[in-house]
Length: 439
Ligand code: ASP
Image 1 (cartoon, rainbow, N blue to C red):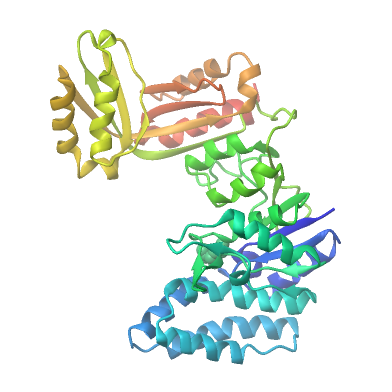
Image 2: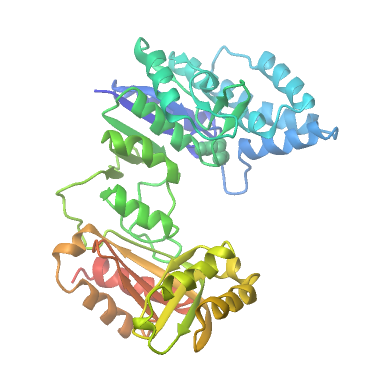
């Protein structure tokens, strides 16, 4: 059995956290490949080392004062080394880093040092081999991740190595220049390593006990989702529920490797299993609820629209021409509504409207702003009657006016449009009817 374990920044923010991580790794001998993030926040007002590195690099490369910023970064690492009682000095590493900062080695290089140095400490602490990700994870010169090349080289490199630490977040272009994934990208590294070693499980350790059924800022102490499929996860993450980097699912999904989200501060919790498919039915019919505020509905009316071939294409073309992506397009006989993101739409509003008039000659166009979309997601909906009925009854009782309904043909989700002001009460009503009351 092989497990790849990735630890997020808050799991490695201090020596105390490192010790918890060490205990977790040592508790299961199949935890063979470790992917660390950079030290994150120790408390809510703290700064992540990654952000400190960006700031320090910007100052150094612009010829401004940077020494104090660099010293603070050194302190973060030295505190960890000291707290763990390691016989390790990063002084030589810091000399190289400082020189490269002043030379202007690039902000990706700068940010990557957070995971690089944490990886060195982790390898020393565990007695595992350290592998620099710049030697095994590749990007092309345009900055696109090279999945094939990486997999060939990384799997070959790890083949003979029983236990290793591979820092998250970065790799290198073919020219050798360091390149990072987008923020939170250590999740992606964990997934790439899992694929390369054909892991049985990818454990992603963070500071929450898994995916929650709903946003804890809206629902007090929401339940944890025990098992979720990749498809459900994608629906929920798209709607704003973020625990895992979006790109982290692709490498493992194809290989059928499950991801287990776990909590470093509560290792006894089982967390959430993310799987390709499962016969385990979700406990509450629905798997999760997520949503986003800030949409505009563009309502287009035209008599006999239903018989006009190509009308929808022309209307959507007007959005495409203005580089606006649409979210949902519910339609009626003579009406069609296009949901778009308000901030993206606002600046281009008049250009889009005149383009629609020009290409599709509608009778009228009306705009409704400040709308929210809520996704109720669940593989269990397909085999349960009355899910939609329960959702809308709950919303009616909560006095929420439903402005739009869209159920995907996969029966995996129901999207509901409400006014921004009703967002919280709508989510509460849906959560209560399925989870609290469990009707
Ligand atoms: N340290 C990086 C960040 O803060 C990457 C990561 O933690 O996944 O975004």
